[in-house]
Image (tube, rainbow, N blue to C red):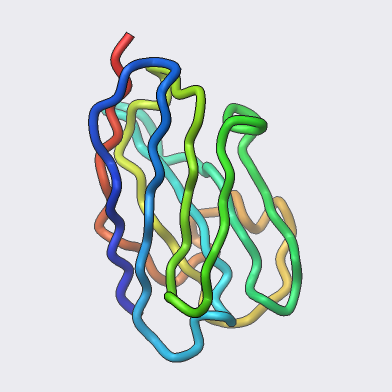
Length: 129
C-alpha cells in the first residue's frame, strides 16, 4: 500500500485547508485510515481516524474536535482531512496512515502509531498568526 498526501500549505490563523491522501490497493474500503502530525522538536501525535467501511467510527484528538473533519471516498481511494479554524499550534508535518488488516478498533488503538501498518510521506501545514 502506498499513501500519497497532499494539500498542505501556508494559511493564516482562522483559515482552512483540506488535506488529501490517495491510497493504492484494491481493498481501500477495508483500510482504517488516519492522520498524525509532528511539529518541530515534538513527538508525533494522533489527529483523527476513520474506520474501514464495515463500521462507522471516527476518532479525533481533543485538540482538533469541532474544527477538523475526517472523511473518505472509497470510489477514489482517498481520505480527507478538512481543517477549519486553524491555529498556529496546528503547524506540523501531517502524515497519512493506514491499517489494512480490517480490524475493529478502539479510540485507544486509533491513537497508537504502531497500530497502523502503512505511513505516507506527509505534507507540511503552516499556520501563521
